[in-house]
Structures are given as structure tokens and as C-alpha cells.
Image (cartoon, helix red, strand yellow):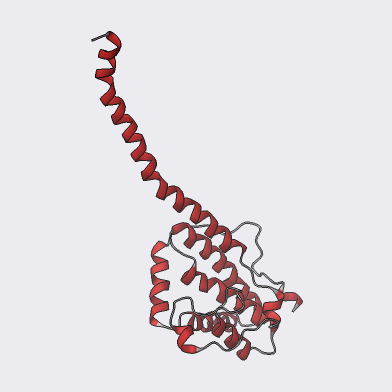
Length: 204
């Protein structure tokens, strides 16, 4: 047996093992790469979703949803594709037909609360949703007409927050989905250079 053949005889199995190990590593990493890309796309979508003046004015107000169909899924029905469930959107309009300012804030908050049901699947998407939700919470605060009593103002904010949450998380399945999303809770900071309201409510 020649020297070259002897060399190949000894190195071929370790070399094959290295090739197989590399192939296994590549295959193992494929799901991780796919998850990272999926997360990146989802976070970008969460950050890009905003209410519009058309939403606030009810230009594209959806029809009353068929309740059995609306309650059949966690996401429910969103015929006008604005990120707000149709029954929630219509309920806000019904309660505040004469206040575009309150509608703007509550619709924005409803949209970000809905994200916990539809867009969260890991800590990064939870973080992005929580940051947007914080903005919306502050926007609800800005929609409250200030009095000289800070306790009264605080109670009004809490009342409006609670009423939106009651609308969005209105079934046991949706409450369970929200709890599942909060299982991904992680630390996060506030968004930099971001206004609280998607729509300038001082102009409404």
C-alpha cells in the first residue's frame, strides 16, 4: 500500500466524522435561523402597526360581527384589517360617539392589547408588544380631561383601561391566551423618541 493510500486509510474516518458533525450542526441551526427571521419580521410588524385618522373617525367602521364566528377563535373577526377586533371597535364607538379624542386613545390601546393574543410567541415579540402597549397606556392618560384632583384623574384612566381590557379579553380562551403570552415576560426599556399617541389627540 502506497504512503498516500495509507494516509487516506487513517484520516478518512475522522474526516468523515467531521463532515457529518458539520452537516448535523447546519441542520440543527436551520430552525434557529428560521425562528430568528420570523421574530424579526413579527417585531417589525408590531412596531409598524398604528391606528389612523380613518379608524378614529369611523370611515371604515366594520359591520357588526356574527357573534358565534367572532367568538370561535382567539383572534376573532377584523374585517377592516386595522388590528382591532370588530366587536371591540364598535363597542368603543358606541360608548364614545362624540369624543374622537377618547376613541383615538382607546382604539390604540385595544389594538396593542389585541397583539398579546395574535403576535406574541417569544420574549422578543412580547417585549415589542409591551413597549407599544406602554405607549398606548400613556395615550389613554393623555385623553383624560384633567381636574384638580389627581385621584379622580387616576381613577378615570384606570376605568378606561379596564373597560378596554374587558372588551379584548372577553372569553376564557382569550384570557388564557393573554396569560400564555405573559409567560414570555422579560425586562425592557421604553422606546426612544416615540410619542405616546399614534394620532395627535390634542388636535381632536
